[in-house]
Amino acid sequence: MLDIRLIRAEPERVKAELAKVGFQAAELDALLDADRRRREALHTLEQLRAERTDASKAIRDLRTRASASA
Image 1 (cartoon, rainbow, N blue to C red):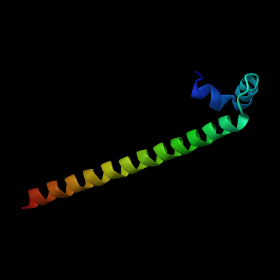
Image 2 (image 1 turned 180 degrees about the horizontal axis):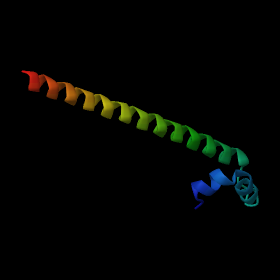
Image 3 (image 1 turned 180 degrees about the vertical axis):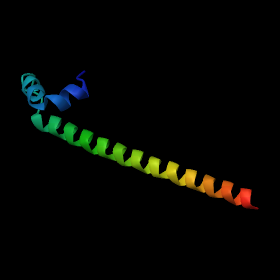
């Protein structure tokens, strides 16, 4: 099994080695594209989680202030 980090770091070398055993370069390109999209989606997810956390903290602070002034 190949490490995705190696494939990302040296795609041309990996393609050359896999071509020796009959693996299509287009398949590796498709893998790299899917990996790129996955990484972008994870980045977006982490941003959304951070926004949710910030919103939750703001709500908590507003409730705390409302309770303190009541």
